[in-house]
Image 1: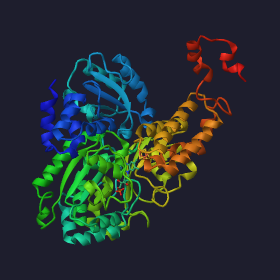
Image 2: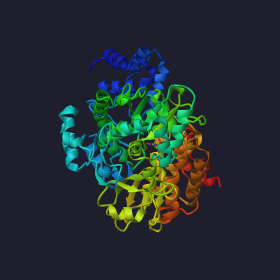
Image 3: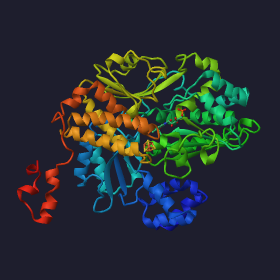
Image 4: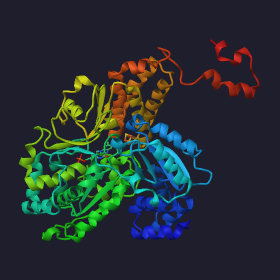
Length: 594
Ligand SMILES: Cc1cc2nc3c(=O)[nH]c(=O)nc-3n(C[C@H](O)[C@H](O)[C@H](O)COP(=O)(O)O)c2cc1C
Ligand code: SF4
């Protein structure tokens, strides 16, 4: 094994010893050394000339960085609800038994650890796992046996069969976005319109952000363009951490020209000269391909100085890898992460378009939003606005998973009914659909005539289907676990609320719940929604709230006592005290006190 110093020096020098890149440096160092030891922390701090505590805070924040040995093969099974439905736990337990391991434990030879993680963006082809952040979808018992054999024989990951790592696009329906535009065409169209003209077309299109909130893209771009100062940034939000969402994965894999040129067009219209793609760690398999595309764009004059010969149109793009953390998808947390800090949401105002990356005006846009910019550059805003509805123009990608015959990515004009989508994906006798992921809404057949649109059912794209035999309590429980794991801990309502919510759901699952717990759940959900600092906490109770209101019997049948069941057994808790004091008389027992 190489010693830390030369490895760290080489990686840090690649990043010009710039502390802003500390997360990237730690990530790459871990790839080389398998974990980040206290000595490595010291070396990184010394090399970057920053306090050790700063390195430590980054190391501890990101779930894919390890401050303890985790083995040469670090295996994480996706534990999203759709992975559960596809049988991930049986596969997980099979692997633990084959490798004679307990969950999270490192094998005695220091080779392998096996654990669970949240969603990996592979819900259309689960169950899935990550091995050293490389995704392996479509797991079966046989594949698990093969992987165990490779691990036992210590075969390097690079020599594992390439087919294991094949991630399918699963495109099932296309309109205008899931089609290619030849390289350079959208850039030329934008240049022909001029900077102000391009911005006007974005505004005319009424295109709204596809990352969830639906903020008008033209207003955001104009805000950044008009903000004081000469330096501006574009950030492409490719964190895609919402359970059940995977459409950005497909855009980045097969339509990267549109995404990257969309970023350059955003730079042109706003005056930004630098762009970042914040790519979630789980999408490591896309990193090299995207980098090749960026290099090719530079070589062909589609990135760099005077793009396509247009004087002053200078723009370049850099990939920044995430390292685990759903919260980093939140725009301000993402910018913190880009600056080499823990990804904690900022206090707003000021908005990102005023004070963003390194204090400069910054546009954070979703992958899908940026890809739409190429379409608007080519066909104009008015034409774009003809598709969809009045308040939700254009098309929307849906990531469909769960109980349906054809999971995958579907493109529809806004305004499509939920019923139509269910029909297209081959979903029959459905009892519920979770739209918008864990933070979204749970809809039942009465709602299936409702429409996918910002004015009716808004969504960033997740569309999870649950058949008649699914236990919706388990769905809500899985989401409650997700939020307790993903809360960044910055504010008390969310840090405590998500844990309390998870614990109550566990208590009910164990058959120890009562009406008291149901009321507590309602209280916690309302409290988180009202008082949390960011969208994560505000929406962390949505799934439990909806499940409670629409599937109450799924909770009721688990309740043992109807009124109250204490969370701890006080009589048992007094046992150590009795032992220490040597008492066992009647008065040392609770029952006699009443
Ligand atoms: C907890 C949390 C996670 C988020 N994750 C993502 C994400 O993975 N991708 C995304 O585009 N937006 C995500 N967002 C929304 C972003 O904060 C931001 O609104 C969006 O990137 C803006 O781009 P848009 O206007 O193109 O939608 C998230 C928000 C929250 C509160
Ligand atoms: S709401 Fe949750 S995720 Fe957001 S800042 Fe507070 S603790 Fe962090």
